[in-house]
Image 1 (tube, rainbow, N blue to C red):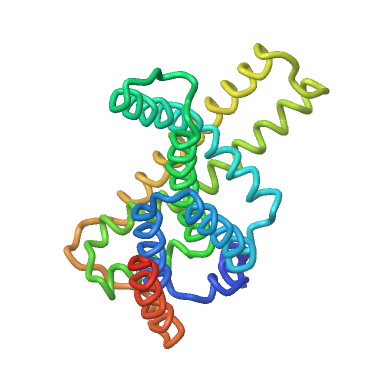
Image 2 (cartoon, rainbow, N blue to C red):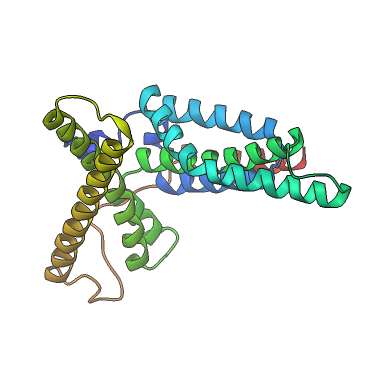
Length: 253
């Protein structure tokens, strides 16, 4: 078995087909968007973290780094939401914007955790799904246009590769510098260098992929054939049914 195939043959989620996991992902996203309570978002976060570790095989260290990374983007959302809720409460009750109430902070935390949960569930799906199987199943089972499906699979393929290139660039700069970056200026320079490296790598991969697609005549025919089939097994059917039933039950709680 090739290394690229071994990556998608590990835990429980790796054994499920892309379609059943996509239905489960849609159910998780539905619950995350429906729930407004902080407690439910926390419970969902813990369940997703356990699923990403045990089902997708993502290590705790890497998982925590990913959560910390998305929290960096969620911090402005937290601040804006807290201020907006406090402003609404202050406008309704005639109070001041500051200090921010506990209710405003709780609502802002729930919105931020919703973003983390959506990101974490998508990460587990990408880590446990072979892009080739995704293309085959979405095209043959859902009858989606293979041009559209192929574009989605490219994103699933490129994101882990670009993330790995970013890590390698950071390690190389650390070796050249001989120490960890100090101060804001050095850290900003390191981040800028990583962004340039990732952006350059993305452009290079896009050019290579476009050239290969052009040589192979991609899109010349309306229909496309596949060398292999991805069957919808009983485990996948039960996963979809369980996801739908569980989501309906939790929705009514």
